[in-house]
Length: 113
Length: 115
Image (cartoon, rainbow over all chains, first blue to last red; front, side, top):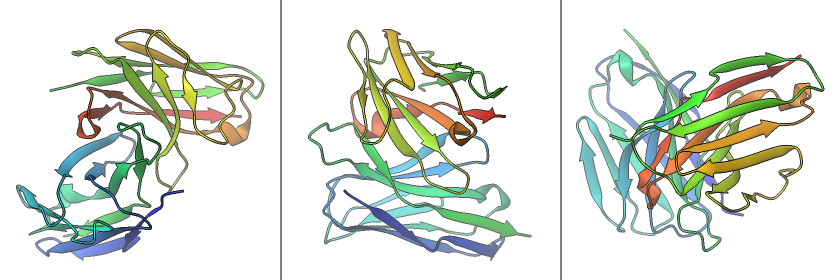
């Protein structure tokens, strides 16, 4: 089945630093979604990408849809303590049902003051 | 915005009992809702797709007789974990769809602990 691998698995950064994480797939995706999950909560959509090469920003967050359609990147600039959480990429499960999602393995972000 | 609620937020039960979890879309109607399970330090895994007025469709490896899903209305889906065992302890998250991939809104999750 489709697998989404994220790296790094976890990261500790200092407040103010920029963060970069990526997501790779074993097959082509036509949509990439990035979510953030706070501890004990459900995931919240951050950015949606629909076209190869697309670069989209949401505040301090910027995500890119890779040209090969097999990867995507998420960058966070000037991190703050509330950026702590788990970041997941997600894409459609290839069963013909457009609205089913598969999630990546996640990147756990911890910010130190 | 679109708000999805889950009830209860936490539940502890004895092994062998059944537990019902509710998922509600509060400000929109959802013909499709999804149920996910998340074990500690792992990703969300889709369990089943809940369709209003019809039977749920289950992902491979998920026992439909153990995880009963009822989508009785356009705003409510329930997941019943029957004869729960300690290995069913997990974080169960639902989402409600508004028709597109980016239009899935997630509930806050229900933490199930089976003793």
